Structures are given as structure tokens and as C-alpha cells.
Length: 310
Image (cartoon, rainbow, N blue to C red; front, side):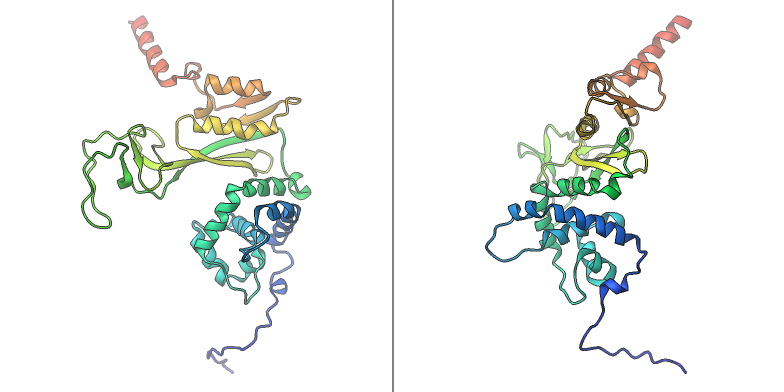
């Protein structure tokens, strides 16, 4: 007999989210680790919030939502909130019941910024890494570090001269702006909507964009991230961030190794790593390129060699 396709609403709901999740789901182990880390941070949450006033979104639920955004590659907090609204798996992980309302995306962003300003997110990552189940997976001797560009939400049209000069954009909400023939740099220009964004390009021949830089330190045993930081975009940001991330793991008693691409292969960075008993490892490159001005010195050496050969 063919079943009916008619949809009928129900007055009551008897769905138990705990029973809906299968016992061998990978998120069960992750949720247990996250809950243990959050329980150890209860005193820090009490110090961050005032004891009077209207109750805010529980910080534990905000921090449980962040691993979901990373694990499922959700590119915005608005999409994350929408996913929590309709996905029972996300509701169960965060700690919401089937009938509990989901917070607004703007409220999520505002409360998330409070946690970031109080360095709670950094301590949360440290608490997760300190759990016995996670600590057994981490290597304490061999690391890799790298950085990537994080494109800012600011438009290139907002990159205006700091002194207020320059032609105004065309009228309208998104008026056109002509940049042809203008020399723009971070020393003379800044974004009017995101002053911390910097004009930067990934490499030779690439277009320049307003962006930031994200840096991550990874242990080499299982490829897990043990440290992360975001900085302004600059040519020295990767090396400075790498030094900041590796220093907490370098106690001086044992030698560590850190791997990186050719961008880290400079005399200053190598010397700083050796001072804290860390051996840097880079891809094989010509000896002459291991200088501060690698491209200029390599070209100069090639010119001298051609002259000697006649």
C-alpha cells in the first residue's frame, strides 16, 4: 500500500537529541573533549561576566559552535547560525534543545568579540590541547609553520589617502572610483572602513588586495594545529608570528625543529631560532639565496659569473 505524502504538524515533540546521534559518531569524542575543557574554564567565564543584568548567550555554547565552523568549513557566522537552526547534529553539539531558539548572528558576533578580547578563545584552545586524549596525539619536538592571506571585507574603493585628498567617488551607494595613474601604498593610504587592513599581494605578478595574514603552527606527528594568530599583512609578519608561536614550546632543555617555506629562510630568523634552541628546516635553495636580499644578490652573482666567463 502506498504511503501518504501529506504533512501533518504535531503539537508536542518527543525527540531526544542524545538518542538521535549514533554512538560511534566522531563528534561524540570531540564533544567530550570540548566539554572537559569548558568545565575547567568555568571560573574564567564568571570573571568575564557581571553577576547582575540580563543573561547573555552562554559562553560555553558560543565556544562549542566555533569548532563546528572549522570542522565543516562554514565560511560565515550567519551561515553557522542558520545551520544550527536546522541541523539536529549541530544543536546537539552546541547544547541546544529541539525547541530552544537560536541566537541571532549579530548577537553571536558581538558576544564572540567579547570572548576574543578577553583572550578566552586562546585559553580555550590551550585547554583543549591539554586534554589527555589530545595531548597523546601531539608531537612536542617537530613543528611546521606557515601563513596565508585573509582577504578583508573592506572594498578597495575605501582605500583612500590619509590626508583626505583625492577625487571623491561617484554619487550613489556604491559609486565608481578611478585608480588609474594613482600611486597607492600603505604609508599614504588607509581604508576608511577597516583601518587595520593593509594592501598586500601574495607574490610577483599577483594583484594587491586589502587583507590580513593568518598564521598557524602545526605539530608534525598528526598534523594538528597547536597555535594560531592573525596579524596585519606585511613582509615580516610570517617570521615574527612564527617566532611568537614557537617560543612557548621551546624550553631550552631540548632541541626542537620547525619547518617552513623559503620565505622563512633569512639570516635574522635562523639566528633567532637558534638562540632559543630551535633548528629551522627549509627546502633546498641555492646558498646565495640564503641572504636578506636573496633575489638581488643572486642576480648580482650571475652577472659577475657571466663577466668572468667572458
